Length: 265
Image (cartoon, rainbow, N blue to C red; front, side, top):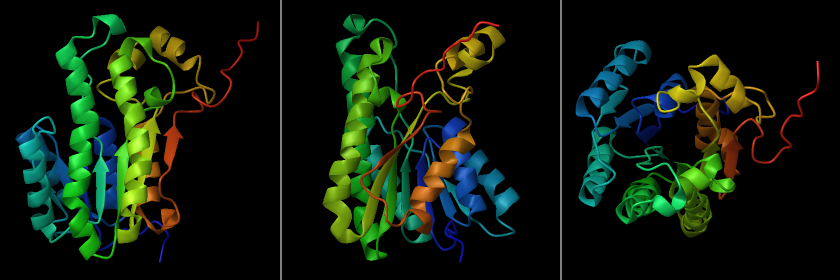
Protein backbone atom coordinates (compact mmCIF):
# COMPACT_ATOMS: atom_id res chain seq x y z
CA UNK A 1 0.00 0.00 0.00
CA UNK A 2 1.25 3.46 -0.86
CA UNK A 3 2.19 5.62 2.09
CA UNK A 4 -0.06 8.28 0.59
CA UNK A 5 -3.09 6.06 -0.10
CA UNK A 6 -6.30 7.50 1.37
CA UNK A 7 -8.77 4.93 0.06
CA UNK A 8 -11.58 4.33 2.52
CA UNK A 9 -11.04 7.68 4.25
CA UNK A 10 -13.51 10.56 4.36
CA UNK A 11 -12.33 14.16 4.60
CA UNK A 12 -14.10 17.42 5.41
CA UNK A 13 -12.44 20.53 3.98
CA UNK A 14 -13.64 24.03 4.83
CA UNK A 15 -13.04 26.81 2.32
CA UNK A 16 -12.75 24.05 -0.26
CA UNK A 17 -14.13 25.64 -3.40
CA UNK A 18 -11.25 27.86 -4.52
CA UNK A 19 -7.54 28.59 -4.17
CA UNK A 20 -5.69 26.54 -1.57
CA UNK A 21 -8.86 24.70 -0.55
CA UNK A 22 -9.62 23.65 -4.12
CA UNK A 23 -6.10 22.33 -4.51
CA UNK A 24 -6.48 20.32 -1.30
CA UNK A 25 -9.83 18.71 -2.21
CA UNK A 26 -8.56 17.70 -5.64
CA UNK A 27 -5.47 15.98 -4.23
CA UNK A 28 -7.49 14.23 -1.54
CA UNK A 29 -9.63 12.77 -4.34
CA UNK A 30 -6.56 11.86 -6.41
CA UNK A 31 -5.27 9.85 -3.45
CA UNK A 32 -8.54 7.99 -2.98
CA UNK A 33 -10.43 9.86 -0.26
CA UNK A 34 -14.08 10.81 -0.28
CA UNK A 35 -14.37 14.54 0.25
CA UNK A 36 -16.99 16.82 1.73
CA UNK A 37 -16.48 20.29 0.28
CA UNK A 38 -17.65 23.21 2.37
CA UNK A 39 -17.77 26.98 1.97
CA UNK A 40 -20.33 29.70 2.59
CA UNK A 41 -21.62 29.50 -1.00
CA UNK A 42 -24.02 26.58 -1.45
CA UNK A 43 -23.91 26.74 -5.25
CA UNK A 44 -20.10 26.72 -5.29
CA UNK A 45 -20.05 23.72 -2.94
CA UNK A 46 -22.36 21.78 -5.23
CA UNK A 47 -20.46 22.80 -8.37
CA UNK A 48 -17.13 21.77 -6.91
CA UNK A 49 -18.47 18.45 -5.65
CA UNK A 50 -20.01 17.72 -9.07
CA UNK A 51 -16.69 18.43 -10.79
CA UNK A 52 -14.81 16.17 -8.37
CA UNK A 53 -17.30 13.36 -8.90
CA UNK A 54 -17.03 13.73 -12.66
CA UNK A 55 -13.24 13.80 -12.82
CA UNK A 56 -12.29 11.41 -10.01
CA UNK A 57 -15.36 9.39 -9.09
CA UNK A 58 -15.39 6.75 -11.81
CA UNK A 59 -19.18 6.69 -11.68
CA UNK A 60 -19.37 6.75 -7.88
CA UNK A 61 -20.18 9.62 -5.55
CA UNK A 62 -16.90 10.49 -3.88
CA UNK A 63 -17.69 14.11 -3.06
CA UNK A 64 -20.57 16.05 -1.60
CA UNK A 65 -21.00 19.78 -1.05
CA UNK A 66 -22.24 20.99 2.32
CA UNK A 67 -22.31 24.77 2.88
CA UNK A 68 -21.24 26.20 6.21
CA UNK A 69 -20.50 29.65 7.61
CA UNK A 70 -17.67 29.48 10.13
CA UNK A 71 -18.61 32.87 11.53
CA UNK A 72 -21.82 31.29 12.86
CA UNK A 73 -21.20 28.91 15.77
CA UNK A 74 -24.53 27.15 15.26
CA UNK A 75 -23.61 26.56 11.64
CA UNK A 76 -20.29 25.04 12.70
CA UNK A 77 -22.06 22.28 14.63
CA UNK A 78 -24.59 21.73 11.83
CA UNK A 79 -21.77 21.41 9.30
CA UNK A 80 -20.04 18.79 11.46
CA UNK A 81 -23.25 16.82 11.95
CA UNK A 82 -24.15 16.81 8.25
CA UNK A 83 -20.59 15.97 7.20
CA UNK A 84 -20.47 12.99 9.57
CA UNK A 85 -23.83 11.76 8.24
CA UNK A 86 -22.86 12.20 4.58
CA UNK A 87 -20.55 9.18 4.31
CA UNK A 88 -20.92 7.67 7.80
CA UNK A 89 -18.08 9.45 9.60
CA UNK A 90 -15.02 11.68 9.33
CA UNK A 91 -11.39 10.54 9.23
CA UNK A 92 -9.72 13.77 8.08
CA UNK A 93 -10.59 17.38 8.88
CA UNK A 94 -8.84 20.22 7.07
CA UNK A 95 -9.66 23.61 8.60
CA UNK A 96 -8.78 25.85 5.67
CA UNK A 97 -11.48 28.56 5.80
CA UNK A 98 -10.29 31.84 7.34
CA UNK A 99 -11.27 35.50 7.51
CA UNK A 100 -9.16 38.63 7.15
CA UNK A 101 -11.64 41.52 6.89
CA UNK A 102 -9.12 44.27 7.68
CA UNK A 103 -5.69 45.21 6.35
CA UNK A 104 -3.91 48.38 7.38
CA UNK A 105 -2.26 50.15 10.29
CA UNK A 106 -2.77 47.93 13.32
CA UNK A 107 -3.88 50.87 15.47
CA UNK A 108 -6.74 51.47 13.03
CA UNK A 109 -8.14 47.94 13.31
CA UNK A 110 -11.84 48.28 14.23
CA UNK A 111 -12.58 46.42 17.48
CA UNK A 112 -15.35 44.38 15.90
CA UNK A 113 -13.02 43.26 13.09
CA UNK A 114 -10.26 42.31 15.53
CA UNK A 115 -12.78 40.23 17.48
CA UNK A 116 -14.11 38.57 14.31
CA UNK A 117 -10.64 37.63 13.11
CA UNK A 118 -9.77 35.93 16.39
CA UNK A 119 -13.20 34.37 16.87
CA UNK A 120 -13.52 32.75 13.46
CA UNK A 121 -9.90 31.75 12.90
CA UNK A 122 -9.30 30.37 16.40
CA UNK A 123 -12.44 29.77 18.43
CA UNK A 124 -14.76 28.45 15.74
CA UNK A 125 -12.08 26.23 14.21
CA UNK A 126 -11.53 24.86 17.72
CA UNK A 127 -15.26 24.08 17.97
CA UNK A 128 -15.25 22.31 14.59
CA UNK A 129 -12.32 20.15 15.69
CA UNK A 130 -14.21 19.19 18.83
CA UNK A 131 -17.40 18.52 16.85
CA UNK A 132 -15.76 15.79 14.72
CA UNK A 133 -13.65 14.30 17.51
CA UNK A 134 -16.08 11.58 18.58
CA UNK A 135 -16.60 10.41 14.99
CA UNK A 136 -12.85 10.10 14.52
CA UNK A 137 -12.43 8.28 17.82
CA UNK A 138 -15.13 5.76 16.89
CA UNK A 139 -13.32 5.05 13.61
CA UNK A 140 -10.04 4.34 15.39
CA UNK A 141 -8.49 7.76 15.06
CA UNK A 142 -7.96 10.41 12.45
CA UNK A 143 -6.04 13.42 11.26
CA UNK A 144 -6.83 17.10 11.76
CA UNK A 145 -4.90 19.67 9.72
CA UNK A 146 -5.24 23.34 10.59
CA UNK A 147 -4.20 25.73 7.83
CA UNK A 148 -2.33 28.56 9.49
CA UNK A 149 -0.07 31.10 7.82
CA UNK A 150 3.55 32.16 7.67
CA UNK A 151 2.13 35.45 8.97
CA UNK A 152 1.68 33.72 12.32
CA UNK A 153 5.43 33.17 12.58
CA UNK A 154 6.70 36.67 11.88
CA UNK A 155 5.67 40.29 12.58
CA UNK A 156 3.12 41.59 10.08
CA UNK A 157 2.28 45.20 10.88
CA UNK A 158 -0.48 45.58 8.27
CA UNK A 159 -2.29 42.37 9.22
CA UNK A 160 -1.54 42.24 12.92
CA UNK A 161 -4.87 40.78 14.09
CA UNK A 162 -4.69 38.09 11.41
CA UNK A 163 -1.07 37.32 12.29
CA UNK A 164 -1.96 37.01 15.97
CA UNK A 165 -4.85 34.71 15.10
CA UNK A 166 -2.65 32.48 12.96
CA UNK A 167 -0.01 32.37 15.72
CA UNK A 168 -2.85 31.19 17.94
CA UNK A 169 -3.71 28.49 15.39
CA UNK A 170 -0.12 27.20 15.54
CA UNK A 171 -0.32 26.89 19.32
CA UNK A 172 -3.80 25.38 19.11
CA UNK A 173 -2.26 22.64 16.97
CA UNK A 174 0.03 21.67 19.86
CA UNK A 175 -2.71 21.91 22.48
CA UNK A 176 -5.23 19.85 20.52
CA UNK A 177 -2.59 17.29 19.58
CA UNK A 178 -1.76 16.84 23.26
CA UNK A 179 -5.44 16.59 24.18
CA UNK A 180 -6.47 14.15 21.44
CA UNK A 181 -3.46 11.84 21.29
CA UNK A 182 -5.26 9.32 23.51
CA UNK A 183 -7.97 9.04 20.84
CA UNK A 184 -5.33 8.35 18.17
CA UNK A 185 -6.16 11.66 16.53
CA UNK A 186 -3.15 13.45 15.10
CA UNK A 187 -3.35 17.24 14.90
CA UNK A 188 -0.93 19.21 12.75
CA UNK A 189 -0.71 22.51 10.95
CA UNK A 190 0.39 23.83 7.57
CA UNK A 191 1.52 27.46 7.40
CA UNK A 192 1.47 28.74 3.81
CA UNK A 193 3.48 31.68 2.60
CA UNK A 194 2.40 33.62 -0.47
CA UNK A 195 0.33 31.24 -2.62
CA UNK A 196 -1.10 31.90 -6.09
CA UNK A 197 -4.86 32.18 -5.60
CA UNK A 198 -7.73 34.57 -6.26
CA UNK A 199 -7.15 36.29 -2.92
CA UNK A 200 -3.53 37.07 -3.79
CA UNK A 201 -4.17 38.10 -7.41
CA UNK A 202 -3.01 41.72 -6.89
CA UNK A 203 0.39 40.41 -5.75
CA UNK A 204 1.14 38.10 -8.69
CA UNK A 205 -0.90 39.27 -11.69
CA UNK A 206 1.40 42.25 -12.39
CA UNK A 207 4.94 41.11 -13.37
CA UNK A 208 6.70 43.99 -11.63
CA UNK A 209 4.72 43.42 -8.44
CA UNK A 210 5.41 39.68 -8.65
CA UNK A 211 9.13 40.35 -8.93
CA UNK A 212 8.94 42.58 -5.87
CA UNK A 213 7.08 40.10 -3.66
CA UNK A 214 9.33 37.17 -4.61
CA UNK A 215 12.50 39.10 -3.82
CA UNK A 216 12.51 37.95 -0.19
CA UNK A 217 11.58 34.32 -0.91
CA UNK A 218 14.69 32.10 -0.89
CA UNK A 219 13.23 29.62 -3.40
CA UNK A 220 12.60 32.52 -5.78
CA UNK A 221 8.92 31.94 -6.52
CA UNK A 222 5.50 32.13 -4.94
CA UNK A 223 3.72 28.93 -4.02
CA UNK A 224 0.95 27.07 -5.80
CA UNK A 225 -2.14 25.46 -4.22
CA UNK A 226 -0.67 22.00 -4.86
CA UNK A 227 2.31 22.91 -2.67
CA UNK A 228 -0.05 23.18 0.28
CA UNK A 229 -2.06 20.16 -0.84
CA UNK A 230 1.09 18.04 -0.80
CA UNK A 231 1.75 18.87 2.84
CA UNK A 232 -1.88 18.11 3.72
CA UNK A 233 -1.74 14.71 1.98
CA UNK A 234 1.45 13.85 3.88
CA UNK A 235 -0.10 14.77 7.23
CA UNK A 236 -3.39 12.99 6.45
CA UNK A 237 -1.91 9.70 5.27
CA UNK A 238 0.23 6.87 6.59
CA UNK A 239 3.26 8.85 5.44
CA UNK A 240 2.69 11.24 8.35
CA UNK A 241 1.52 8.67 10.89
CA UNK A 242 4.34 9.52 13.34
CA UNK A 243 3.79 13.28 13.16
CA UNK A 244 1.54 15.18 15.55
CA UNK A 245 1.66 18.61 17.16
CA UNK A 246 3.77 20.05 14.34
CA UNK A 247 3.28 22.94 11.94
CA UNK A 248 4.96 22.74 8.56
CA UNK A 249 5.98 26.04 7.00
CA UNK A 250 5.32 25.92 3.26
CA UNK A 251 6.63 29.36 2.35
CA UNK A 252 9.67 28.90 0.13
CA UNK A 253 11.95 29.45 3.12
CA UNK A 254 10.69 32.98 3.78
CA UNK A 255 10.39 32.72 7.56
CA UNK A 256 13.36 30.57 8.51
CA UNK A 257 16.02 31.27 5.88
CA UNK A 258 18.08 34.30 4.91
CA UNK A 259 16.47 36.32 2.11
CA UNK A 260 18.36 36.21 -1.19
CA UNK A 261 21.01 38.88 -1.72
CA UNK A 262 20.76 40.82 -4.94
CA UNK A 263 24.06 40.66 -6.81
CA UNK A 264 25.07 43.42 -9.22
CA UNK A 265 24.97 42.34 -12.84
